Image (cartoon, rainbow, N blue to C red; front, side, top):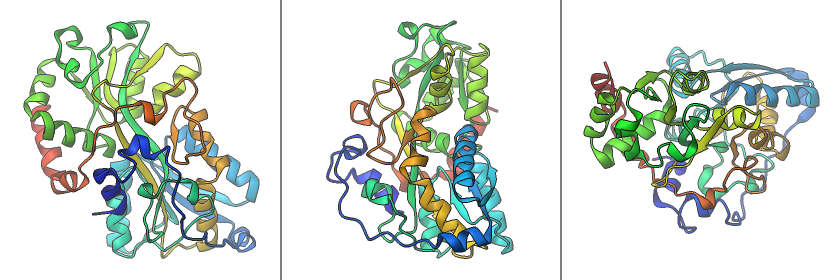
Amino acid sequence: MSAIGTGLTRRIACTGIAAAMLCIPSLASAADAVDVEAAKKEGRVVWYSSTPIDQANKIVAIFEQKYGVTVELFRASGSELLRRFNTELDAGQVAADVLTTSDPEAMGDFGERGIFTKFVPEGSANIPDYLKDPDGMYVAQRLNIVAFYTNTKILPVDKAPKAWSDLLKDDYKGQIVITDPASTVLQLYTVAMIAKEFGWDYFEKLNDNGVMIVRGGQQAFDTVKRGERQVAGGTDMSYANAAKMAGEPLEVIYPDDGVFVVPAPSAVLAKAKSPNAAKLLAEFLVSKEAQDVFPASGNYAARTDVEPPPNSPRLADMKVRQIDYKYVKENNQATKKKFAEIFQ
């Protein structure tokens, strides 16, 4: 199992991911040097990323202006990104120099297979140890929070679901949208863990309650924003949080019985065509400058010295549900198949 997965599952010495975010990071390996001039001479870097598009574009713009290195961004949902990346791996023609994805277990496997190069970026000492590989193969770029959100023009917060079991209530019949675990890695973790705890009967009942299935977080957000559905019942909350900060009538609900927190690690490819520019970008991704983009866009950064999004709770104030990464990995295809059978 990957180091990130192991750290999240065993909850380390800080009694859980939420508390660990407030712990003082232990002494880390010295940061590896980056040859900035060599990176500028290479002039370009290819970044494969599942980072929400607005946040990714902001980071790219700041990086390009600061260093004059062009970033070719390929952005896709976690599952789609990994499908393309694995296809390129099998063909021996990987285009990416830097990979950022929301699947820490997959990143662990890639690291063990030697697909990444060891690189400890400046700034990674501000990221808790359980969110990075001890051998320096990858480090968390941001944290994905899986929660609920509602369109308050249609459903006020006090009437919205407050727990996972609430999604089964008649009050929300035909009013919930969720994402497909075959299309987004965050939902794969969520569905696998909910099914493990509550059984597949939970999803049978959810289907009976008229839930809508969409491909990814952006589609779920658009559906709720347009008022087609009242509630997103377990999806990436950053879209709604960003919209709320922009004045939209959306409100994030952190379930009383726990959110899921999934780190999104970044790594430098061992066969990067622009190795110096790749390291420069990977270092920039965990810089304070880049990390500040996340809370300003409604998301949670990986660094402990970056505040949460405005008017959002700290992780220490949330109840966080454990993720059994080994279980998810072993039941990956079975989870997708069973979900598809229920919601076909």
